[in-house]
Image (cartoon, rainbow, N blue to C red; front, side):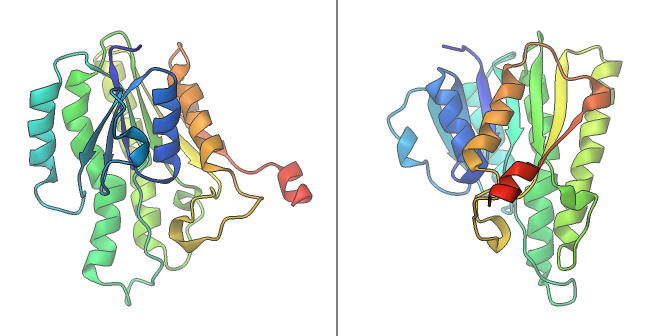
Length: 234
């Protein structure tokens, strides 16, 4: 059993839930954070602890501070994976204020506020930060302004964090993974056989977390899309 904890946001559905399952099945302690209650899979599992937080609420950073103060000391956290995400497919004019701000809060601002709290608790011998990006940051689409902008912002966070860790000579790896469409129903996209499964996406993240050597800064973005064979077979 691993003594340190991996934090997974968005742990109640989709890729975050599948990743939490894989980590726990391998004997890894997990702190799952999500806006929904603890998944039934983990209700009696001692390796999994759940924290229900809504990244659009005002008090969630305070609640996170209180939780960390009660549960963690230095070097207790070995990884942070941000799987939480939100998309509202509307043009800018027709979007409500909350439609726009909620996507930025969940996809982007929450990462900064969690990193501020997590980094001092991460293992000195080398922790891992993995952020779920989107190809939308390079290929923006109509009705996705807030989503695409927030995903582009993750790249700035990732690059700045990598440079900070280099300057401070800390052994922490930070990587963005951009998946093609995944079978999660995210954004109202119907699941089909040509998409990457949520389990498959989670397995790729797990492989990255299990890699002993840190990812090189120049290879900080990993893009994974369905293969040509998958598309032809479909």
